[in-house]
Each structure stands twice: as C-alpha cells, then as structure tokens.
Image 1 (cartoon, rainbow, N blue to C red):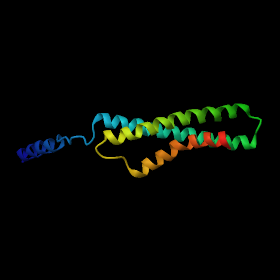
Image 2: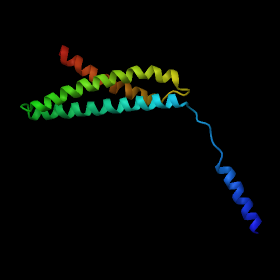
Image 3: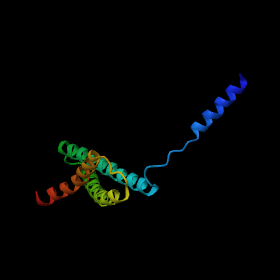
Image 4: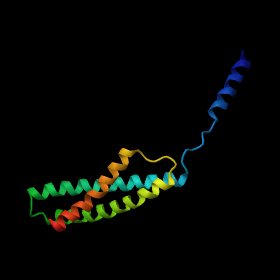
Length: 123
C-alpha cells in the first residue's frame, strides 16, 4: 500500500514539473507592457482634462485648475504620441497581434488629446 502512494507522488511531481515554453519573447512582452502603460496614462490624462473642463464651467475663476487642464493636455498628447509610435513596433515584434478592440481603443485614446489641441487652436 505504501509503495503505491510513493509512486503516485512521484508521478504527480513529474506532471507538475512540466514547463510550457512562452509564446512571446521577453522583448515583445516588454513592448506590450510599455504600450498598455502609455494607453492607461493617456486615458487618465483624458479623464482629468474632462473633469477639469466640467469644473471650470462651474467655477471659471479657478486659475489653478485651468493650469492643470493645460498640463494634462500637454502630457496626454505627448504620451499619446508615444503610444502611437510604439504601436507599429508592437505589431513587428509580437508573434500574435494584440486584440483588435484594444488597438482601436488605444488609438482613439491617443488621438483624443491631439484632437483637443487642434480644436482649441482652430476653434
């Protein structure tokens, strides 16, 4: 009886020690993480810009919030440009492309502060 239990434990250890090779390289994973971080930062900048805009419609004398909105617009546009630059590199490096919905969302988020700057300039 005890011999069977030991044999079962050895087989169980062998099954657990199997290692599946990674699908993507470390470089492609690093580029993917960098791209998702830029998308997240741009989205946060966009949300702060929207919140500051609504706050300024209620309290137009808040000059510090106006400054914060301008800084977030500048920062969001720079990080958005970085996100758009990383995207073609991401497609080249990865074996499997990222999900299409995430790519479209990332492009829309990255273009939003640039469109806001254009609207402020020409509008």
